[in-house]
Length: 161
Image 1: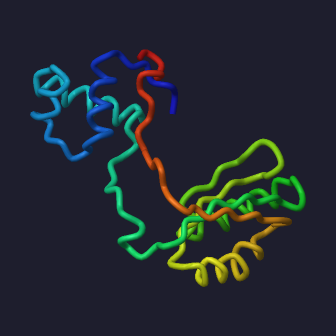
Image 2: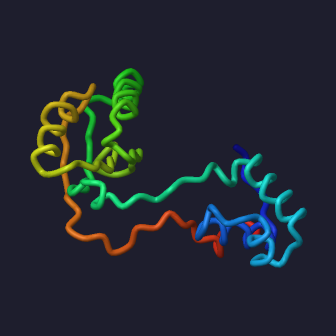
């Protein structure tokens, strides 16, 4: 996807949709100061350009039984394409890994992992994570409390904003 140039109306639409992705177009148009047809057209253009990648429901992990949230630093043995590719494929095959980031610094990857409890997290670490291709070292940090958990982008700093 190429970077999208956004004008103030686009940014208002994105801002409202970040708060409520299920808002009706008529209500969205009213909130952003457009008539419904141009608002819908702009929203469709933002979707087509990739600025809006999709719509999801935000679920409560604790209410659904995921009591452990871990952030895991992973170092690989060797920095070769075949190890990197195999590790990435392994990561993609495990839904417990809800985020994976290539990092600078001491670690190669940072994983965000959800588990039912400490026992399940321990089993996942020993039986899966440590056996992934090329893994040399893992360092886990468990979240004790969530202070901020937002999916909203800082649109005031967006290009065109």
